[in-house]
Amino acid sequence: MEKVAIQLWKNSNLDAIDFKNFLINEVPRSLKDHISGYQVNLADEDVKEAAGLIQSCYPPSPNAIIFLKVKNFFHFEQKLSIFESHAKNFFSYIVSESKIIEVDDSKNLNRRTDGFSQIVFLEKPKNIDSFDWFDHWTHHHTEIAIKTQSNFIYTQNTVVRKINKESPNFIAIIEECFPSGAMSDQEEFYAAKGNPTLLKKNAEIMMESCNKFIDFSKIEVIPTSRYLVI
Image 1 (cartoon, rainbow, N blue to C red):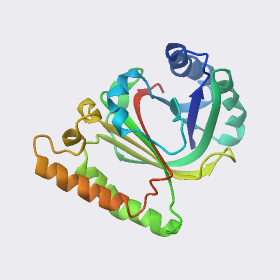
Image 2 (cartoon, rainbow, N blue to C red; image 1 turned 45 degrees about the horizontal axis):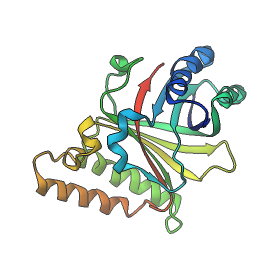
Image 3 (cartoon, rainbow, N blue to C red; image 1 turned 135 degrees about the vertical axis):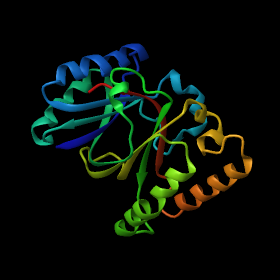
């Protein structure tokens, strides 16, 4: 089993509704015999209040991120051409999935997941080797991300390899789901509602850890609406 993450930039002549319908309805219907999991994350109007959270070092940010699961990528790779009709460009990555915080997703099937999903693409800074990067992420930062934020879904995807040679050298792709209020309320984002002192503490702890392993000149942070289809 392999998981594939895909960044998509929609054709400029395509409206948002047609693009959404294509990704949520047409693609999984066409690929249903080849995939065992399919999730669409859209940077749409429903997350416009989260504009302040966007970080894009490779603008423009993708309009959508797809996560799908296949028996093997070797036989599936040519199927990616389905996106060419509606996307002017797309980058694909094979990833290894680790679900740190999960929910009963049966209630989220074929509907928009409550809140919003923040997708983060990370590159490894040059001043740290891969072992130390993953050591900090998994043995230090993960616990901090859980304790200092209001995330109710937290999935870590380690990039096994990129499919497009010209794509950025991302080492990890993270998905975190937050309550809707966290789009614009820092207290809610940092699990400190009504407590400015705790907000300051949690934000400082989080950023201190981030600064040890994240290159903020090579990062993508994209608030999205999450649709779990398969």
